[in-house]
Length: 371
Image (cartoon, rainbow, N blue to C red):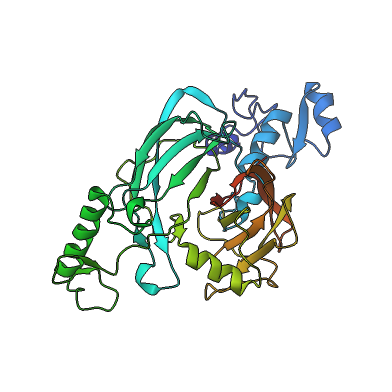
């Protein structure tokens, strides 16, 4: 019931009126009814007694809606009614912006951008990515924009890291464009007064880059989930804490060593981050994987110090988690359904489909999503 109608009830006391909003049978300062039956007897079916005034049942519903509790905007409030998947609409083409950074046990490579990586946007039905939708190369800051993604697109990005020439056993010079990006980064760090720091990228007397990017980065699969519902800002900044991180093979082996498992070269690996309703890393989330588990498989969650823990059972405030050494079968490709549940409330964030590939690390953000 609107404020205007409430004011009119007082101004027209004792007069018979027809108000479009609440459609009062009789506006008066005296009680009109004690029950719905009183209203039906006076004005017919469709009237109910609310606060001793006869109103239509639709007006009662409107009033109840107006007086309802406001939406829960807490970090996990949307789990009551999580957003639905965007339906694919190929007539709507959006920009999909991604960024790659490096993670290494050597602090010198943490969160450095990965330039010169080849990325292919692929449909989920094309698991080998034999017919990519679009191909692009990361710029000096690790960014790439795909401009052929459609609303609700379900697929993945196949990542091939920049590689050195095979003529020298894979340890030759970087491609010229990648080398230039690294030189530009060295110049930028020098201009910021960082050239004297231990992990600064700098040039030696021969002009060669010191502290280079690892040359044994593991290829990856970036799962596009949830499907895009709107176009990304083609110049938008992506926080390095939320950007997919490429690991060196040495770092991957070290991670598995901490988990007490050997690296299976025929296995695929999944690394993910759980996000709450506000898009921040979400704590208290546990994962359930459908299939793919073998003798050397291992689920883990990182603690607040970013250390992997096999006994934790749920995400910390960092939201980081993963499944290592998954059996992808003889084909080397497999899709897995991962269900994420917020343990404190018992409500699901959603079920997410990962593509895993032998020798690759698959990455995914798991935000609340109605299945």
